[in-house]
Image (cartoon, one colour):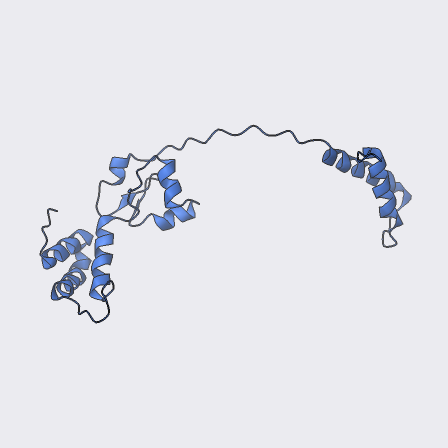
Length: 176
């Protein structure tokens, strides 16, 4: 027995089965239209689908250069829309990208930052001030407490001032 079926025979058998169902209510005028639509569906399923040619990778133009993107320590300028962000992660997620895909799309190095330097430093100082990153039983150093206080006091003046105050309180050079 051959496994290949004629599309007309298949459409006819399916139509007979549909009409044989006691729940089917139709008039005799509707049968030819149903038979034709069934034949079209069976024919479409039995013909091999031509493979679509692969689309070439879409070229993405960066809104800004890499150098301009990282020009300010207060923010990172997105290469997607040219707007400044303290952190790119949420912006990338709304555009359906991961940091790795973003770096790959714009040919960026693996160490391209996703968070602005001053924002990262402020978060680091805050985390240290509440005791994150230390082992159980260790006390918070006076320098870290002093840096956290300095960041808190100067936060209203701007993130650059907060960063400088934290560096000064920690005893590091602000030129590093």
